[in-house]
Every structure is written in C-alpha cells, then in structure tokens.
Amino acid sequence: MNALFELTTSSRKLVAPYLDNYSLEQLNKIPEGFTNNLFWNIAHIVVTQQLLVYKLSGLPLQVSDDLVEKYRKGAKPEHIATQEEVDLIKGLLFSTVEQMKKDYENGVFQDYTEYPTSAGFTLHSVEEAIQFNAFHEGLHIGILMSLRKFV
Image (cartoon, rainbow, N blue to C red; front, top):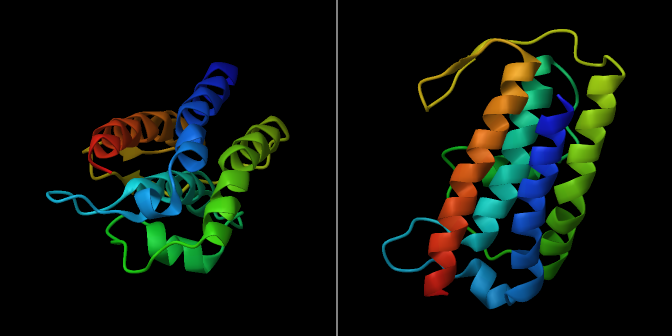
C-alpha cells in the first residue's frame, strides 16, 4: 500500500503547480469545447478521493459538504472560484493524502460499501478504492494537460 500512497502524493505534486502557476482567471476559464476548468478538475480530485475512500467507508470527510456539492462527479462549474477557495484546495491536496495514509496504517478503515464506478469497475474494499483513486487522478491529470493549452 505504501507504493499507492507515494503514487497519490506524486500525482498531487503534478497537480499542485497549476494552483501556483496559473492566474485565478486562467484557473476559472472554461475553454470552448470543454465543460469545466483547471480549478474544477483539481478540486474534483480532492473531493473524489474523500468520497471513494472515506464516505464509502462510513467515515467523516476532511472536506466540507459545500465542496462536495460543487466538485463531485456530475457537478459543473457554476461559480467563479475565489483565491480563498484555491488556497483551501492547495492545503487539502497533500493533507488529505497524509491523513489517508495515517488512517490506513492505524486501521481506521473497517467497513466499505461496494460501489460500481462509472469506469465499469466495482470497488469492494478501501484498498480497491485507493487503487482506483490513483487511476482517477491520472485521468484528470490528462484533462489538466489538455485544458492548460487553451487558457
């Protein structure tokens, strides 16, 4: 499992520079032909990890219900993200991964509600959720790489 935690941290290291190197305007821009923006994808990565790993384990999330509503699967950017929101997500990028690792090592994850993903793979355990999350983050890194060309 350590390799998966390291992989998730590496994934977040690829994402973090977007929050530092793009202006708030660029982070919020939805280019023609796209349905979301750079910031939405980054916040979605954080929210999805929380839902897949914590919510489906019956545990409290480290993100607010407001963030979940704005950035869950199926949500669309319906507001302009503020600098405060960008700073919040920037802080959550790594703290959520560190907490997940700590909680896993401490045996916090006891139960898991089976979940069929939209990718056609059914998750049966927190270990599968952590593995699937790495795949999910990779997909969104690809989207970020495409979006950056148009902002």
